Structures are given as C-alpha cells and as structure tokens.
Image (cartoon, rainbow, N blue to C red):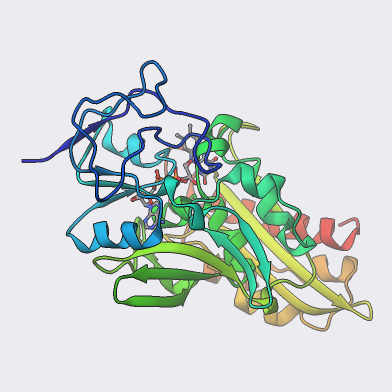
Length: 328
Ligand SMILES: Cc1cc2nc3c(=O)[nH]c(=O)nc-3n(C[C@H](O)[C@H](O)[C@H](O)COP(=O)(O)OP(=O)(O)OC[C@H]3O[C@@H](n4cnc5c(N)ncnc54)[C@H](O)[C@@H]3O)c2cc1C
C-alpha cells in the first residue's frame, strides 16, 4: 500500500532552504503520523510515515539504500506532477542536509550543492561566465518558486523546457551522483537521457553540480522566449558563453533548450565561430544551416516547430550581439 505525505504548510526556515518542508525528522527517528512539526508553526504537519528529513549525507544515503524512495527538494515540479496534495512515500526530503546547500568556488571548479535554490544563485557573487545562470534564475517562475525550487531539481526533472539546463550545458557542468557505494561524476549532457529521463541508478541522488575551471571563462548571456514576459514556460531559450582573446573568439559555448527532447549544444556552430573577430562579423556568421540540424523542435500548444526553430536562431544571434556589444 502506498504511503502518503500531506504537506500542510511550508516554512521559510531550515538550513537556508526557503520553502523546505518544515517537519524535522531523521532516519533514526521517523516522524509520527499526524504529529505536529517540531518548529511548532500552526498548520505545519505531515500526515505520513515514510517521510525522512535527515541532516547528514550519510543518513540521506542510508534512506535511499533502503529501497525505492522519492527524492524531494523544493517540490515545485514534484507536487505539480502528482496532481494531488499528497506524495506517495517513502519520501526523502533533502532540504535539511546542510552539506547540500550553497555554492562554493574551489580549486576544482564551482560546486553548486543539490539543495541550492534559484534565489541562492541570484544572491551569490559568481564569475561573469555564470551571468546566464543568474539571468535564467530570475526567470524561473516567480520569486516564490525561486525561493523553493532547486537547480538540481530542475535538471533531475529533465523537462525539455528546463531553463537551467542550457546554461549548465554551456558551463560544461558535470553532475555529482552519490550513493552508499560511492561518488561518480557524469557530464550533464550524458546525465539527461530523454524527456524526463536521467541516468540515476538505484540508491543514488544528485549531490552537486560542478562547473570545471574550463567552463568558467568569459562572460555569458541567457535569452528566453515565452508567450509573456514572466511566469512562462519557454518556447525556446538560448545560453551562450564567450571567451575573447586579442579581439577574437577563443572559446564559445552555445546551447538551445525547448527545441529538442533534451537541450543541446550547437557544436557545429561553435566550431565555425572559433577564431572569428568578436564583433558584428560573428553575428553574421550565424547561419541557420549551422543551427537547425542540431534541433528537433515539436509542435505544441505554445508554438509550432518551425516557429521554435526560427526563434532559436534569432535568440542565438541576439545573445551573441549582446555579448559582443555589436548591432546586428
Ligand atoms: C508555477 C511554476 C512555474 C515554474 N516556472 C518554471 C520556469 O519558468 N522555468 C523552469 O525551468 N522551471 C519552472 N518550473 C519548474 C520548477 O520550478 C523547476 O524545474 C525547479 O528548479 C525544480 O526544482 P525543485 O527543487 O522544486 O524540484 P522537485 O520538484 O523537488 O524535484 C523535481 C524532480 O527531481 C528529483 N530530484 C530533486 N532533487 C534531486 C536530487 N538531488 N537527486 C535526484 N533527484 C532529485 C525529484 O525526485 C523530482 O523527480 C515552474 C514550476 C512552477 C510550479
């Protein structure tokens, strides 16, 4: 029989994770069904067994090793996907694990903990290469969504329209996966294998996203097209990162989202642009022939495939125009 979790109210406290489910339990002391929250806030309660909110990685991984478990972060995709107010248990709420919060700049690159919210991204001082991720962050839903929703949840949900994915692809991001058996890292492009499909093995969870030093150069731009300005699912979006040396393109990374099952890097275009002057010449070199073969846009309620393809190409040109400071 499925266990159910009823989330009565969310708290803005708890390990810096605004929106964390506020019932505080541990692996060793599972919550009492229907018991009031330890925080004592009126209406904070969880009617469930099989709800775990550990504070350490070791405890979290032990819960996962116990069998199939729903991992819950900000729950902004998860609850929408259930179309109910209850989740089937067992549920592992990762927002209480301190080690999963925050962004660190290390010698090994930038580490984005799996419980880091979009609001954390906006508030963190990061190198200019991350401008696109911060620009995407303020476009994810509303401020309320950004306070609860995590970057890792965005990639694990694996929606073709996930705004974080093109940015992280253009940052050469890698996904850190942990289980009791150990830790492995895979490139983000290999982690997302299809629409709502990721390479997550039994007992594993995403513990961090890593941007290696090779992905931290230059400056970047994110552009999203939707049917309205805010609170909108992308019709197409583009993330571009440009490294200029002696006036020419030394490194370039361009990724497009919402125009294929999985967001994709435009490697053919990137190769064609290397070495060109970083000015209006660059924008003029962006031909549709170098973009469209990489995309497979679908027709849906938001746009048809042809419009999506046209929009993606235009967004690429505009992103490069912004990055080079040149008129088209
Ligand atoms: C009103 C609204 C507007 C939105 N607008 C946008 C938007 O503009 N752009 C956009 O991209 N998204 C948008 N979203 C979707 C959502 O907010 C984001 O995708 C968000 O980043 C998901 O993060 P989360 O922490 O809430 O994930 P959750 O809902 O907690 O989890 C999502 C999925 O990832 C899994 N998961 C979470 N963390 C881990 C982990 N560490 N390891 C393994 N699996 C994990 C969960 O099991 C679940 O399958 C919107 C959602 C809502 C409700």
